Image (cartoon, rainbow, N blue to C red; front, top):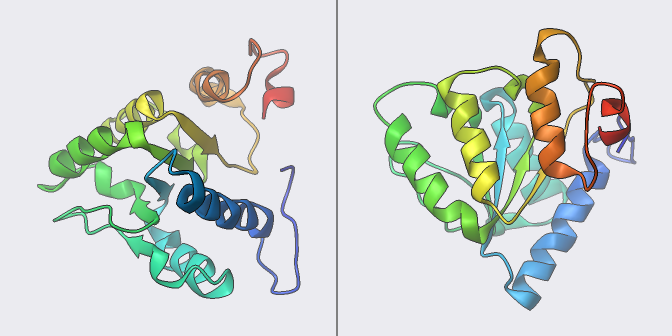
Length: 171
């Protein structure tokens, strides 16, 4: 999706949320992934929960993962990415995410924020590398010093070779 799409309720994530709702239905019908892991900045966790559960009618299928005692019982499990940065619960959360990723569809919201080298972003790349499918979302083009790591994310999510000359096509 290029740029924000507006719908009647003003949501900028409407097309993705609609696809997520369809994926949730597909999960229930076909069982090819056990859950959706939705990674988003912690400032957006509550908004994502409201949009997914109330606006899009997914209700109890959506849960926010408790970083201190992580479980993934919802069809859609929202994780604040900053929870992977530090703190005593970081290691346990990272380990559990990597264990469930092979049977999960992953959504990385605001992926342009993960184009740097740090423990949080390394964990997110590891989760993406073991997940059978993932979706990266951003409305921010790849540029500057983060271009190299941004291209690595793009290489994993498109079916053609990506380089600095064609990265806008991939994004």
